Image (tube, rainbow, N blue to C red; front, side):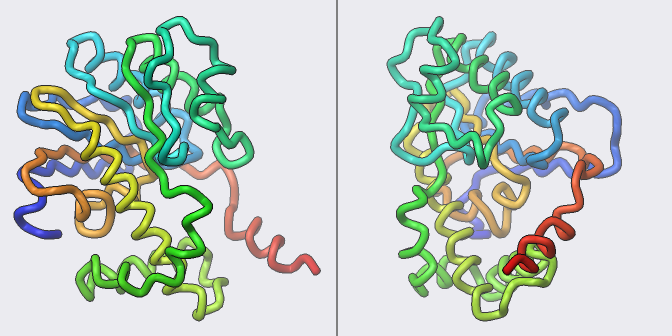
Length: 243
């Protein structure tokens, strides 16, 4: 992580804790709150809602950015009583990838509070170009790049052909950079932008924090690990075995 890029980061590593976790009190100077989730953990999504409602009630919430929606889509300008269907349309929500019911409480809490919800992820149309862009490799230090690539291997249960590892790591870097850009544009003095993303995307040495501009004060929260609901490696092996 570039030393000057982040003025303050507090990482909460709470794996193994099963008690409910309260949203930490955030210093008045913090402008960005990165919430790293386990995507299949319903408790995490409920804590997202709690964080949004808490900051909105105190008049401190500037915007909510989502990994789950692409850049260029937002709820800005929608009235507070907008119906869910119109919110999903505004965000171009992909139900197949991100079950709406998991994220509806957080998204609608922001909409009802009059706070814009912003798509932050790299548009799918740009992913192929990112895979071929070797310049993305230079955005992380050597050790961090190696770690990112190893996480790609591990995340695909070591079943991914090696030739695909570097291109897919570039997509991950490009996604982190896109989310960082969205957050930076939404940042406001004395207010907080929340980013909801997978835990790997908020890693201080690998993820979104690396790409944020100097001067922003950032706090990182990773919710407690939850038992996976599915064996994703078994699912992947089954998919790869299909003719």
